[in-house]
Image 1 (tube, rainbow, N blue to C red):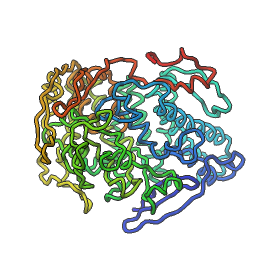
Image 2: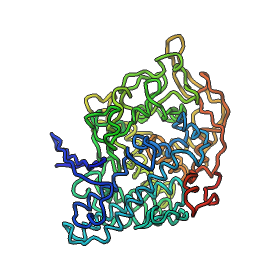
Image 3: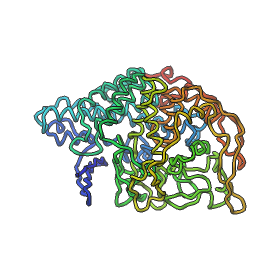
Image 4: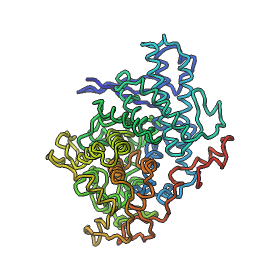
Length: 594
């Protein structure tokens, strides 16, 4: 069967069709927004206009409303930053170090960058939808039915970016179809409830129109599965767990998606033998492999990102905003293979690049490194190449996958059936069994895959309900193992905890979901939001990162947490620039605590 992938790049929509033995490439011209009088003359022009809306899932090189680095950072910063930094499992350095102290300010660049980009997409979608409703159905191949599909995709994109805004900032100014910041530059802030209502309205419309398979066979377009997954999430924010449960079960039962049998193969780039849109992906932004992936490629296309350059250890040429805490590494149960697939630790050798962490010189031979004393462990979900080999990488940015749907479904089962829901524990078990390698005997590895797969299908994870019943009373780790360097030799050293962890008080199922999401979606796009939505932030921080003022030295590798929990930090601040420029906003509209 032939599958067609939709990539949007500056000046062209690149459709690549991957057959079993070959690849074909077709370039289709498009514009950021087709002029209204042209848009209404043919389906082809309407599709080009829709591609202009999809375009902003990528960064943009020649964007007048954002710094040039947003092109290469987009889908990493702000997305991964907002979803991970506040949890302390990933501890950035440099300009972003304030996240580890929860000292971010309204004038932070990531806030205004993300705000501008989200509204840029919403502006573009609103203009497109306004023009679309005036189109004569006769210009479409299948008349009004095709027109509705196009409308559904555009509305789903708009809902996606409103979801991003409301998760991060709470209630925001709502621009409806036809409204833009040019026509309505001063727009008051609406409530979070009204924002969610608009998201739900758009997604319910799209759900009832779109198919499970991508329109025209172009994988990369919005589908029913993507819409249902984000609609269910919106229902969960609104405590509509029965409604969410139905949408999530529909996705699971559709047969459209399946778990990757090997967790370590989910985030393979094309260079490592991976493929875009594997069966587990429900929504992703795919990055193609260009002929030129060096630094000279950055002004040629928007469809690039520099994950290895940005995430790699500074010791080996990266910029390192994904320093990974020792507490995160210690939090895995024995046998959970997700740790080896996600992190290269101090003293270990990177499985893909063969570079040993902490071996290049005395300044790197310590558990903490740099001026901000960052932990000397690194995320390898997306760091899979030496930064000097290629500036950019063709690794997909997977925003929603089946594992998230399964764990969200489990949560809805517990919320509607009680804490002993057999169905809820069943889906937690499925995720954990995959983590222990139970399905790896079904995986087919690329030639250069650096890990040994489990070949025993009888391997199972320990019972989650029993394990987390104990864990919630004694969370964290009393201590953990890390590498120590002395006289040119690495030795394993055991570090005892210098402080007490606070037990969880939440039900066992909620602790289980918190920790399984923590291990499953590390350096992805949902962790902080799930903690906030489930009201688990305070318990999580006190259990996994108790407040302390421990020194940074080779004999203590615990995270120094100096801040108190604040409910105000569960939302990020409305960007100060927006308050200054929008006459309908004032300081009283700012989120509490800023």
